[in-house]
Length: 107
Image (cartoon, rainbow, N blue to C red; front, side, top):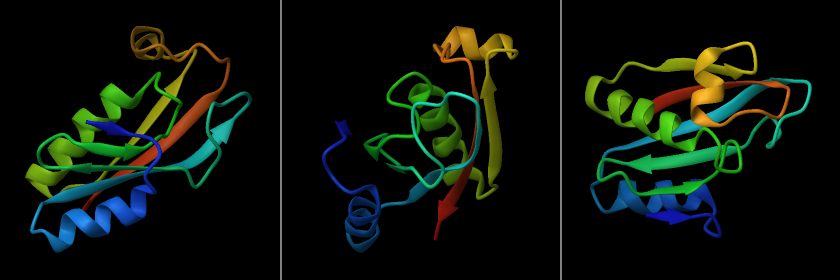
């Protein structure tokens, strides 16, 4: 369930307090045009519920998939999306820039 109005860090804390496994995705680098600035967050819980945004919607699906894998494995991952990346067109990033997103399980 998308909740863009909720602060993602507050929502993550709520989920952790209720015993849910969680992950946090953070925009760590951008180049050129990007929909969200460095420091933007997307919190995800084990049920696939999420809050926040790392791209305004164009790559969230892929980031949520990576977050669910991080929750399961405990391994962090750094994702890169850009117009030179075939996957970027597939997930809808056509803003002309590059976004680097760090995804980690929050214990």
